[in-house]
Amino acid sequence: MEDRLRTEQAILKYKEKISWLDLLKVIAVFMVIVAHANDSIILNQDGNFNFEWGTYIGSLYRFSVPLFVLISGVLLLPTKLNTIDFYKKRLWRILPALLFWGVAYVWFDGWVLQHKSWDKIWTDIIRLPLSFGDASPHLWYLYMLAGLYLMIPIISPWVAKATKRELELVLSIFIFSTFITYLKFLTGLAFGVSDWNEFHSFYYLSGFIGYLLMGYYLYTYLPGWSILTKRTTGAVLFLTGYGITYYLSISVPFSIPNIEMVWYYCSPNVLLEAVGVFLMVEGMTFKKGVFIRIIQTIAKYSFGVFLIHYFFIGIIFRYLAAQFDLHEGLNVLISSLMTLLLSFVAVWLLTRLNWMQKLLM
Image (cartoon, rainbow, N blue to C red; front, top):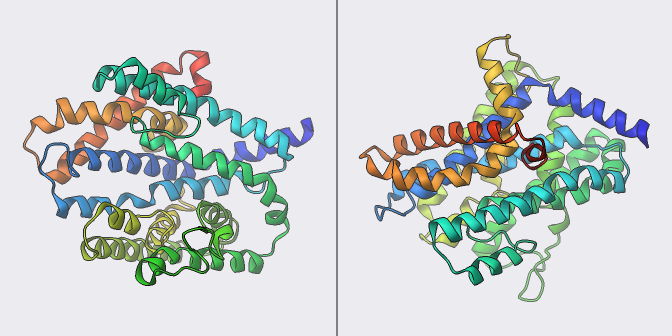
C-alpha cells in the first residue's frame, strides 16, 4: 500500500507542477468570484437590476466550475490507490473544510450580517451535513466534489484500460446528455423522466462525471495537436458557447428557473465554453519571471480562496462597490479583483497556522 501511495503522490506532484494547470486554476477561481460579484452588484441588492450587463457577464463565467472538474480529471484519473485509501486521502481533505467553513458562514451570516436568533443559527448548523444553506451557496461545489471522489476509484480501472475510441464513445453519450434539459423544456419529455422518476436513460453517464472524463481525455490525447490548432479550436468553441449562452439568456421568457436552465453547468453551451478555455491554455509554457510566480502562488492557495471569498463579496458590495457610481461591468471587475486580493491575503495569513492548512489547502 505504501508503494502505491508513493507512486500516486509522485504522479500527482508532477502534474501539480504543470504551469498551465496553475493558470487554469487561477482562471477558474477568479471566475467563481466574478460570478458572485455579478450576483451581488447586478442581479439585485441595490434595486437597480441591469438585465443587459447581468446577462453579458453571467454568460461569461459559467465555465468556472466545469473547469475545476476538468482539472480534477487531469490530476486524479486514473487513481492507483484502492477505494478505501483513496477515500481516506481525498474525502478527508474536503469534508472537514466543508463542515468548518459551513459553520463559519452560518455564524457570520446569522450573527454579524442578519442578526438571526440563536435557534435559527443552530438549526442552520445542524442542517449542514445535508445542505449548504443560504449563507454559503458556493459550498455546494464540495458536496458535488465529494460525489465525484466516491466515483473515481470505481471508474479508474476502466479509465486505465479504455482505448481512445472507447473514451470517445462514452464522452459522446455525455455530450448528448447535456441537451436533455433543453429537450425536456421544449417537449416535456426526456427518455423516461416522469413525476415519479427523475433518472433518464443517460442519467448515469451525465453530469459532472462527464467533465471528469473529458479532462482526462483532453490531457491524454490532445497534446499531439499543434499549438495553433488547439488555440484556434479553443477560441472558436469558447466564443460559440458564450454566444449561445448569451442568446438563450435574452431569448427565453425571463424567470430564475429559465436563466438557471440556460446557465446550467452541464449544458452543451457551457460545455463548449469550458473545453474552449481548456484548449486555449493547455500546453502553454511560461518563462520564469514575475507572472508565473504570481500564478503559481495564487494557484497554491486557490482552494482556500474559493472557500473564504464569499466572506468578502457581500462586505465589498455593501460598504464599497455600492457607494460608487461605476459602470456595472467595471464595478464587477474591481470588486472581483479586490475580493481575490483580500481572500488571498487572508488565506496566506491563516495558513501560517498549521491546523488551518488542512482546512484551506
